[in-house]
Image (tube, each protein chain N blue to C red):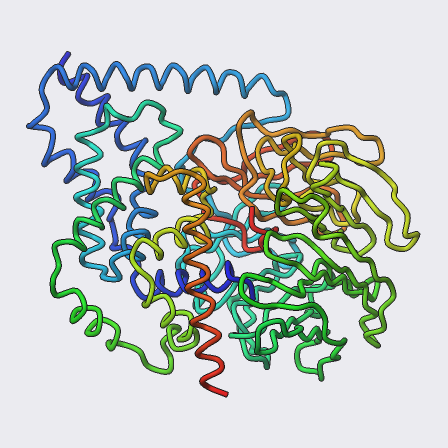
Length: 405
Length: 170
């Protein structure tokens, strides 16, 4: 697990042990007003009102501006979600935390319907299967429509889970002890013996080491990257899920400039067919077909954070010129059809990608967390150009964090 | 007219500060490691926010602005409590049974205990609340470069301790 995973796990546990008192928000605001309002002078109130009016005018102008984007459908913030009962069987969903509490888990279908997920027990990293039917928290698997649980047999303190695209298998990364040690990658059908694919990468202090970029049962491949501090990739392997044979290996320079922490930030399509390699030296992203080992597109001045299911579309963000860090550009994200170079969706101005995305199973839509102003929402962007927030005031999606944005 | 203005201020105060009460509480727990003190700190922060609303020039900065108030309030609380060490020990010994999720991640929890409140705050802000370095810097009132350095140092303090404990267990 990465440092971020460790830290997040700690604070998630802390949130369970010390949940926010019921009604904290209402009582804190009411008491603040009650204790302080009598001390305000009329001049202060007039000043505050003037400022708030100015803020309201600016917010109104921004809202009007965002409405001019015909592909943005804003949703009012802080509105409790209207949920539609349990998740219907067979309906793919994206899971997200409204609050990081046992009862704070919700689901959004790809058509925008919202559902409440049964109560879970926190205590480990949460990762959803691609269709959201299952959720792994540590080594416990929840059926998200019923709340039924099963246990996976691994040590959750040293092992992290990536679901395969069949929603049944998992790719496991087990960190071996010791600075600089590799990690063991295995392919596992819960209830059956795991297939150990081999040991890869080098992990240590602030070095994530071996990281699963794609776990695909349908194409029988696992894409593994060795990731360094700063999310730069040094090596990439494509492994056969049955034998562990290395079907493809690629290396990346980790220091192409002398004045900064540079390298390539690499993500893979969920089916393991395409790579997007954002290079700090060129400031551009290369789309590569793994099967053909050939470059199929270049996205100038863009950093790619993830793909749609079969790799047709990418979520990307503009990179500042001559910027020496990778995995650092998240403001004003866009969805691009790399085959045509066409931007099919762009975010409201100034919004930024918070760091987690999900691909619609067998579809082209992408879900992600987006911060607009002071609110983080779950957004769905479709290849038709329609993008909308289906819920707001959320914490983050229950998918793998894309790097350290 | 005065009442109408008062209602407008109240409404906007709730809209601007309300969403950050819960994250503020989480930050306070991270820094103080005491839910009762965290509750008090957030409550006091809300009062200070109400009183200093005129200093908020851009409502889009409300998160950093309010979390900065919470962080300062927590530092004030820490400075006041001479009994802090005893109270930490007492708190930590309660409820830690095998079924407690804390037991599952004891190593990271123990390592976190050894960090200073500001170190825990910076890890909480950057890695848990997903604030960018620039916003972390605004919350803590330091430069972006200093924030980056502090994240690095806090992480460095965290990881070596974890690895040391792993080696001790071998």
